[in-house]
Length: 184
Image 1: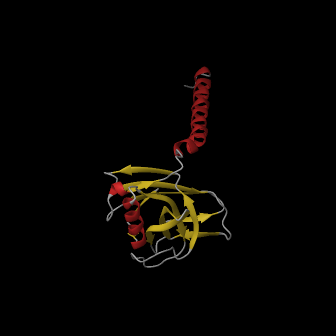
Image 2: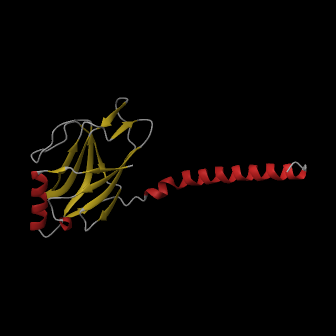
Image 3: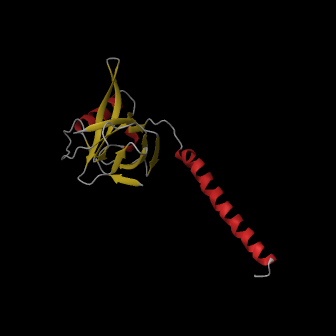
C-alpha cells in the first residue's frame, strides 16, 4: 500500500537545497527515518520526536515533472520491544561539511493515525508518494539502493502459480476419472 504524504519542508531542508544548488549540485535525499512520535510539525522541526530507525531508500521513482516521488523502504531489523506504530516519517538529505557527512531533516510528516506497525514477526515494507511543493523538482535527487521489489516477490508468485496449476491438475484428473466411469 502506498501512502500519499504531504510533509512539511523544514527550514534546514530548504537551506540544504540552497547550499547544494550554490555548489552546482542537487540535494540528495538518502535516508528515511521512522518513529512513533506524534507531534505538530512546522518548518522549524529539526528531528523526529521518537525516531526508531533511519533507513536507506531501497527504490525511488520520479513522476509528474519530478514534483512527485515514489520511495520504497524495507526494514528487516528486530525491534527491542514487541513493536511500535509508525506515526512519523522524516526524509533526510545528505551533505558534506568540512569532510564530514551530515544528514539534515529535509521534510517531516507526523499524524495521529499510524502509517504502519513495525513488529519482529514480519519485514516492514513502506512505500511513500512524496509530493514536493515549495522546492524546484530538479533541485532534488534520490539516492537509492536500486532494489527491484518485483524480484523479492517472485518466489511467492511462483509458489502461488504452482498451487493453482496443481489445483487445476487435480480437477481435470477428477473430471477424467468421472468420464471414464460414465458418470459425466
